[in-house]
Image (cartoon, rainbow, N blue to C red):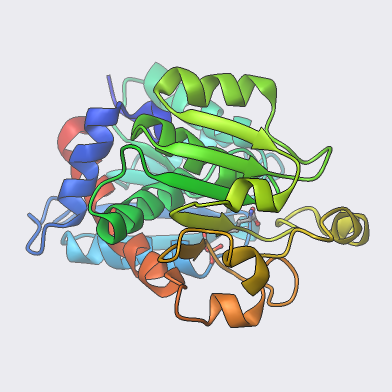
Length: 303
Ligand code: CP
Ligand code: NVA
């Protein structure tokens, strides 16, 4: 059965550890020599597109990035037909989609046709597993290990948050999430994190989440596709800025993480994201290493 990565817990905790080990390999095998990866983007991307394209090049392959207007999910063609077509030419398909179910339709079509072409979620409304792999890699480097470490999430319990918490669960982390009412983690997602092995606490004030934490992670208040709700969201998230006063409550050597793009003065203060506790550039670089490790694993597991 072909392995896909639509959410990080499509991998077991041992498999996540293997992918992170592969991410650290300096001279990877050219497993994509003479082969391609299609990267379809229904939404903009800087880090994901560049990190994944270069990872493909480092594995000897050829990436082709495709914009939404070139494929037209559900308008020009169905998700199934897009996947079947790309599988004629590529060893791996990545997609950043508005609707997570389009990814499920793609994997469904490929699996039904018996095609061994893995699909990678490059961000959906529900999940961002490639980001979570890079975040775990970054924290492992910073802490020297993940089990028992405390991660605080401040802000919207969005796609990035969900994947990070699931990944943290697989790694046995302690996690605290502070979100305003109406923007928190669902009970089903919280149960899923705990069932994977995570120690999870949901709180309604940022100070409660950050107290003594080893790392503090945040993300934008307005995700791609939520622009119409921007004003209401900014009002709801007032008081949830990660600033120096909040960071003073974390562990003395705590790190600040942000998947980027950052909005200085909204979810994070400029003095924090650009300050000495910030690990956001290491995190951004690790998107490349994590993507390469993931592709190495997927291509070898899929062949
Ligand atoms: N963090 C991240 O996914 O960035 P991009 O949206 O620029 O790819
Ligand atoms: N939550 C953000 C992450 C961007 C990388 C979004 O979905 O737009």
